[in-house]
Length: 318
Image (cartoon, rainbow, N blue to C red; front, side):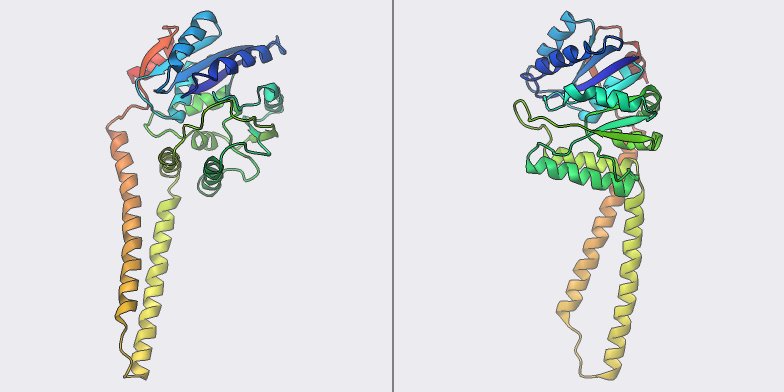
């Protein structure tokens, strides 16, 4: 069995070498397992590409990809999948928080027959903002993508080659890996591992990037928001009809009642605001359809090491 470790790299100039070194030392514990490491530089503002290039020149296990700009973590993961040759893909971050000493727990769990196995963290060692983002992502996945409630989707997980092949069929500009996985299989397991403290720096996810990721999730892989908007519109139509009946009855029973201007304006503002939100949601769907029709690239590769990554060359020619 050959494992392909997929690592997106962003602002990890000072942590990546240690992650790769520990990963290679860990793999010596299972000499029967072959492996490769695919590093994707996602338009990072630091000098992490110099680190990646040096590592790839010194170690034949390492493949290196460099984007022309920042396309996002999930695009970097898909690029790594395009370059892999292993029987299973193992995903982890570049910040040193992944518990590499426990990675074989996931490999052994995969051998039990699962298609995908996630490393579940009993304690998430991130700041409050990132913990909120993780919680929001889980709630969105459960409610909109029918994600299993008992599986914690983390960035430390492994999946079989058949899932990788299915995921790579997606060539649109809004990749969301969890959505691609859940539409390919529901044979998903998890095993408890312990997340480490971040070695240095801070998360590259800002509020804007998290919002973009959530939008990718529920606009690219679910129409439930549109259905919710329709239900909301129907609900307010019923409320409006009932309110109209109340007004008519009150007016007939008490001719001295004067209709309230404040109430009328409040209702108009509420309904108008809801209409604008719904129109914005529909516009978001239409805009993304338009961008997909225009064949906006999922990612653009500036440089590859080694230079004969044929799978990526074919993908770029599409």
